[in-house]
Image (cartoon, rainbow, N blue to C red; front, side):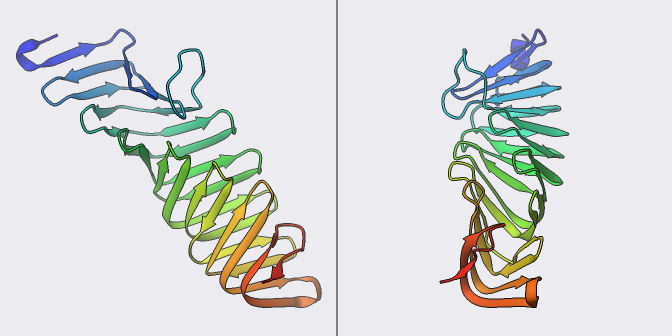
Amino acid sequence: WTPARSVMAIDQNPEALDRDSRLLVRHLTFHQDRETLDFLGPTQLQRWHQTRQAKKPPQTVVRTGDGSWNLQSGTLEAAGPVTAVQAEEGRTLKASRLVGNTDRKYIDLIAPVRLTLPVQEGVVKAGDTRWRYADQQFTSDVPFRASLKRGEATGLGFRVNQATSTVIVPSNCRLKQPGEQLEARRCSWNWVDETIIADGNVELRRSELDQVTKAERLEGRTGKNTVANT
Protein backbone atom coordinates (compact mmCIF):
# COMPACT_ATOMS: atom_id res chain seq x y z
CA TRP A 1 0.00 0.00 0.00
CA THR A 2 1.38 3.40 -1.05
CA PRO A 3 -0.69 6.02 0.82
CA ALA A 4 1.06 8.98 -0.83
CA ARG A 5 -0.13 7.75 -4.24
CA SER A 6 -3.48 6.37 -2.99
CA VAL A 7 -2.58 3.02 -4.55
CA MET A 8 -2.91 -0.49 -3.20
CA ALA A 9 -1.47 -3.46 -5.13
CA ILE A 10 -2.56 -7.05 -4.43
CA ASP A 11 -1.13 -10.12 -6.11
CA GLN A 12 -2.15 -12.99 -3.81
CA ASN A 13 -5.25 -14.32 -5.59
CA PRO A 14 -7.27 -11.10 -5.17
CA GLU A 15 -11.06 -11.02 -5.44
CA ALA A 16 -13.52 -8.16 -5.90
CA LEU A 17 -17.13 -8.72 -4.85
CA ASP A 18 -20.49 -7.07 -5.19
CA ARG A 19 -24.03 -8.27 -4.51
CA ASP A 20 -24.28 -10.68 -7.45
CA SER A 21 -20.75 -10.94 -8.90
CA ARG A 22 -17.24 -12.10 -8.07
CA LEU A 23 -14.14 -10.94 -9.97
CA LEU A 24 -11.09 -13.22 -9.81
CA VAL A 25 -7.80 -11.95 -11.25
CA ARG A 26 -4.05 -12.55 -11.21
CA HIS A 27 -3.02 -9.07 -10.02
CA LEU A 28 -5.08 -6.12 -8.79
CA THR A 29 -4.23 -2.44 -8.36
CA PHE A 30 -6.73 -0.31 -6.47
CA HIS A 31 -6.59 3.46 -7.14
CA GLN A 32 -8.34 4.89 -4.08
CA ASP A 33 -8.55 8.46 -5.36
CA ARG A 34 -10.69 7.40 -8.36
CA GLU A 35 -12.13 4.17 -6.91
CA THR A 36 -10.87 2.11 -9.83
CA LEU A 37 -9.57 -1.44 -9.91
CA ASP A 38 -7.03 -2.19 -12.64
CA PHE A 39 -6.59 -5.92 -13.05
CA LEU A 40 -4.26 -8.22 -14.93
CA GLY A 41 -5.65 -11.41 -16.47
CA PRO A 42 -6.47 -14.07 -16.95
CA THR A 43 -9.67 -12.73 -15.44
CA GLN A 44 -12.82 -14.58 -14.38
CA LEU A 45 -16.10 -12.77 -13.73
CA GLN A 46 -18.63 -15.01 -12.01
CA ARG A 47 -22.30 -14.00 -12.19
CA TRP A 48 -25.36 -15.13 -10.25
CA HIS A 49 -28.85 -14.36 -11.60
CA GLN A 50 -29.83 -12.59 -8.40
CA THR A 51 -27.76 -12.71 -5.21
CA ARG A 52 -24.26 -14.17 -4.95
CA GLN A 53 -24.29 -17.39 -2.95
CA ALA A 54 -21.13 -18.98 -1.58
CA LYS A 55 -22.53 -22.53 -1.69
CA LYS A 56 -24.13 -22.25 -5.13
CA PRO A 57 -22.07 -22.17 -8.34
CA PRO A 58 -22.49 -19.12 -10.59
CA GLN A 59 -24.95 -19.34 -13.47
CA THR A 60 -22.52 -17.57 -15.79
CA VAL A 61 -18.72 -17.41 -15.93
CA VAL A 62 -17.02 -14.81 -18.15
CA ARG A 63 -13.30 -15.14 -18.91
CA THR A 64 -11.32 -12.17 -20.25
CA GLY A 65 -7.89 -10.55 -20.20
CA ASP A 66 -6.68 -7.33 -18.57
CA GLY A 67 -9.16 -4.60 -17.67
CA SER A 68 -10.53 -2.06 -15.23
CA TRP A 69 -13.59 -1.68 -13.01
CA ASN A 70 -14.74 1.61 -11.48
CA LEU A 71 -16.47 0.85 -8.20
CA GLN A 72 -18.27 4.19 -8.07
CA SER A 73 -19.75 4.30 -11.58
CA GLY A 74 -19.82 0.55 -12.28
CA THR A 75 -17.95 0.97 -15.57
CA LEU A 76 -16.22 -2.24 -16.63
CA GLU A 77 -13.77 -2.76 -19.51
CA ALA A 78 -11.81 -5.89 -20.36
CA ALA A 79 -9.58 -7.02 -23.20
CA GLY A 80 -10.29 -10.21 -25.10
CA PRO A 81 -10.62 -12.77 -26.11
CA VAL A 82 -13.90 -13.02 -24.18
CA THR A 83 -15.59 -16.34 -23.44
CA ALA A 84 -18.81 -16.59 -21.43
CA VAL A 85 -20.33 -19.93 -20.43
CA GLN A 86 -23.91 -20.33 -19.18
CA ALA A 87 -23.67 -23.70 -17.48
CA GLU A 88 -27.38 -24.42 -17.00
CA GLU A 89 -28.26 -23.83 -20.66
CA GLY A 90 -24.94 -25.03 -22.05
CA ARG A 91 -24.54 -21.85 -24.12
CA THR A 92 -21.16 -20.34 -24.97
CA LEU A 93 -20.54 -16.71 -26.00
CA LYS A 94 -17.36 -15.41 -27.58
CA ALA A 95 -16.35 -11.83 -28.41
CA SER A 96 -13.24 -9.78 -29.14
CA ARG A 97 -13.55 -7.70 -25.93
CA LEU A 98 -16.18 -6.21 -23.65
CA VAL A 99 -17.30 -2.96 -22.06
CA GLY A 100 -20.19 -2.56 -19.66
CA ASN A 101 -21.60 -1.28 -16.42
CA THR A 102 -22.26 -3.47 -13.39
CA ASP A 103 -24.56 -0.88 -11.77
CA ARG A 104 -26.74 -0.77 -14.89
CA LYS A 105 -26.46 -4.56 -15.29
CA TYR A 106 -25.23 -4.83 -18.87
CA ILE A 107 -22.20 -5.95 -20.84
CA ASP A 108 -21.54 -4.92 -24.44
CA LEU A 109 -19.89 -7.74 -26.37
CA ILE A 110 -17.74 -6.27 -29.14
CA ALA A 111 -17.72 -7.86 -32.61
CA PRO A 112 -17.17 -10.42 -33.82
CA VAL A 113 -19.67 -12.14 -31.52
CA ARG A 114 -20.39 -15.87 -31.70
CA LEU A 115 -23.09 -17.68 -29.71
CA THR A 116 -23.15 -21.48 -29.60
CA LEU A 117 -26.48 -23.19 -28.78
CA PRO A 118 -25.92 -26.91 -28.11
CA VAL A 119 -29.60 -27.80 -27.59
CA GLN A 120 -30.61 -26.24 -30.90
CA GLU A 121 -27.38 -27.44 -32.54
CA GLY A 122 -26.94 -23.86 -33.64
CA VAL A 123 -24.41 -21.07 -34.05
CA VAL A 124 -25.25 -17.36 -34.18
CA LYS A 125 -22.74 -14.93 -35.72
CA ALA A 126 -23.39 -11.27 -34.91
CA GLY A 127 -21.91 -7.82 -34.50
CA ASP A 128 -21.86 -5.74 -31.31
CA THR A 129 -24.38 -7.21 -28.86
CA ARG A 130 -25.68 -5.89 -25.55
CA TRP A 131 -26.15 -8.48 -22.81
CA ARG A 132 -28.58 -7.32 -20.10
CA TYR A 133 -27.67 -10.13 -17.77
CA ALA A 134 -30.07 -9.24 -14.93
CA ASP A 135 -33.00 -9.47 -17.37
CA GLN A 136 -31.49 -12.43 -19.27
CA GLN A 137 -31.73 -10.53 -22.56
CA PHE A 138 -29.48 -10.07 -25.60
CA THR A 139 -30.03 -7.22 -28.07
CA SER A 140 -28.32 -6.11 -31.27
CA ASP A 141 -29.13 -3.59 -33.99
CA VAL A 142 -26.80 -4.93 -36.68
CA PRO A 143 -27.12 -7.86 -39.15
CA PHE A 144 -26.75 -11.42 -37.89
CA ARG A 145 -26.76 -14.94 -39.28
CA ALA A 146 -27.88 -18.05 -37.41
CA SER A 147 -27.30 -21.64 -38.49
CA LEU A 148 -29.68 -23.94 -36.61
CA LYS A 149 -30.52 -27.64 -36.65
CA ARG A 150 -33.56 -27.11 -38.87
CA GLY A 151 -32.36 -24.28 -41.06
CA GLU A 152 -30.94 -20.76 -41.22
CA ALA A 153 -32.06 -17.30 -40.12
CA THR A 154 -30.84 -13.80 -40.99
CA GLY A 155 -32.05 -10.32 -40.19
CA LEU A 156 -31.25 -6.80 -39.09
CA GLY A 157 -30.91 -6.94 -35.34
CA PHE A 158 -32.42 -9.29 -32.76
CA ARG A 159 -33.94 -9.35 -29.26
CA VAL A 160 -33.44 -12.56 -27.29
CA ASN A 161 -35.35 -13.09 -24.05
CA GLN A 162 -34.06 -16.18 -22.27
CA ALA A 163 -36.78 -16.02 -19.60
CA THR A 164 -39.57 -16.42 -22.20
CA SER A 165 -37.53 -18.52 -24.66
CA THR A 166 -38.23 -16.09 -27.49
CA VAL A 167 -36.24 -14.27 -30.13
CA ILE A 168 -37.57 -11.30 -32.12
CA VAL A 169 -36.08 -10.14 -35.42
CA PRO A 170 -37.41 -6.57 -35.77
CA SER A 171 -36.39 -5.97 -39.39
CA ASN A 172 -35.64 -7.82 -42.63
CA CYS A 173 -36.42 -11.27 -41.23
CA ARG A 174 -35.55 -14.30 -43.37
CA LEU A 175 -35.96 -17.92 -42.30
CA LYS A 176 -34.97 -20.90 -44.42
CA GLN A 177 -35.45 -24.59 -43.73
CA PRO A 178 -35.72 -27.65 -45.99
CA GLY A 179 -38.58 -27.08 -48.41
CA GLU A 180 -39.60 -23.68 -47.03
CA GLN A 181 -38.42 -20.09 -47.06
CA LEU A 182 -40.07 -17.22 -45.18
CA GLU A 183 -39.50 -13.48 -45.56
CA ALA A 184 -41.14 -10.74 -43.50
CA ARG A 185 -40.60 -7.28 -42.11
CA ARG A 186 -40.63 -8.66 -38.55
CA CYS A 187 -40.82 -12.09 -36.97
CA SER A 188 -40.66 -13.80 -33.58
CA TRP A 189 -39.88 -17.39 -32.63
CA ASN A 190 -40.27 -19.41 -29.45
CA TRP A 191 -37.58 -22.10 -29.42
CA VAL A 192 -39.42 -24.25 -26.85
CA ASP A 193 -42.81 -24.74 -28.54
CA GLU A 194 -41.39 -23.67 -31.97
CA THR A 195 -44.18 -21.14 -32.53
CA ILE A 196 -43.36 -18.52 -35.15
CA ILE A 197 -45.18 -15.26 -35.92
CA ALA A 198 -44.32 -13.13 -38.98
CA ASP A 199 -45.67 -9.63 -39.71
CA GLY A 200 -45.48 -7.22 -42.63
CA ASN A 201 -45.16 -8.12 -46.34
CA VAL A 202 -44.92 -11.80 -45.47
CA GLU A 203 -43.97 -14.22 -48.22
CA LEU A 204 -43.79 -17.98 -47.65
CA ARG A 205 -42.35 -20.15 -50.40
CA ARG A 206 -42.68 -23.93 -50.39
CA SER A 207 -40.76 -26.11 -52.83
CA GLU A 208 -43.64 -28.56 -53.01
CA LEU A 209 -45.84 -27.57 -55.97
CA ASP A 210 -43.84 -24.32 -56.18
CA GLN A 211 -46.32 -22.77 -53.72
CA VAL A 212 -46.15 -19.08 -52.73
CA THR A 213 -48.25 -17.60 -49.91
CA LYS A 214 -48.44 -13.85 -49.27
CA ALA A 215 -50.06 -12.14 -46.28
CA GLU A 216 -49.68 -9.37 -43.74
CA ARG A 217 -49.41 -11.91 -40.92
CA LEU A 218 -48.61 -15.61 -40.67
CA GLU A 219 -48.52 -17.90 -37.65
CA GLY A 220 -47.45 -21.51 -37.21
CA ARG A 221 -44.72 -23.85 -36.05
CA THR A 222 -41.34 -24.36 -37.64
CA GLY A 223 -40.81 -27.69 -39.32
CA LYS A 224 -44.51 -28.63 -39.05
CA ASN A 225 -45.91 -27.19 -42.27
CA THR A 226 -48.67 -25.57 -40.21
CA VAL A 227 -48.10 -21.90 -41.00
CA ALA A 228 -51.50 -20.25 -41.48
CA ASN A 229 -52.99 -16.88 -42.42
CA THR A 230 -54.58 -14.77 -39.71
